[in-house]
Length: 403
Image (cartoon, rainbow, N blue to C red):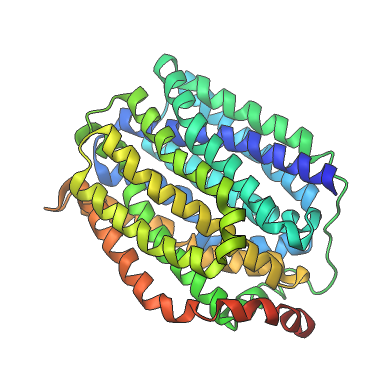
């Protein structure tokens, strides 16, 4: 089991580096074609739309599939898609329509990959080690996707748009090699995927705390993607950054995520998941409002977004560990995908709203202002339900027994 965990963690780390490179490149590619915030936000919207359309069937298929084999197939598809975009970039044939199409296809593949990894982690990790495992997973993700990957991607982009894309392809190839060596098998028996598509949604709807956490994540993603979708323009117009500076900004934004992940296990163990989550849902929107009103230079922006990324990391570890420990193993793919459909399905809506708010009288800082206000309101409304968090641990076995 330890060997499988090391392989899975290493594969995730490598793909996170490739993802970080790609995160920087895609908006930079869009910015070479247009300066319209609505069109640039459209890249993010198309890339996240599959969470609304494909999440439920993805969960059903994953629950009926061998996770190792499914992840290999998905990552091979992702490598082919990014490679195709690299070829298009080398031919200087890119258009916004091409970017939208590639973003949508990669988003669909990511939906399957995310659900599969959510199923594989508890399969290779003992229950009492989930916070530690998820903390390590999040630390690697933030370190590679937000800290190292973006500046590398932006730097390579300054030489050639295709270079960072080929690096992403290589990352997928390495990951496929590692995942193929896993010994764990996660094939489930039972009804066909089509017959059980809504089983996860029904289970999630009946669990008060997990349902509330899902809705909080939905609001968070709506708000976050209002800011992310126009961040490249915020960096240029408000902070005065070029392509390399934009990469440095993304890297700085990942610092808090790495730190939060590294201390998450200790904080959750000492104060409990409820206290950690409650703290993050209030500190994060305050920091976002601070960005809207105070951030006019890179150091200030970096300091405030360190708070937001640290909060996101702590939130992810606490809520993911609770879900993995609570949901029956035969339903974890479908419950995860149902939650992702609701919460991550807000990303394209947030991206579109971000583009619209950015061209409103509120200006380029408007998305941060509206996002912070929405998240603060959601935190106030959710706090009474989060008081039930301690009761979940004692109820875990009851939920498993009834499944």
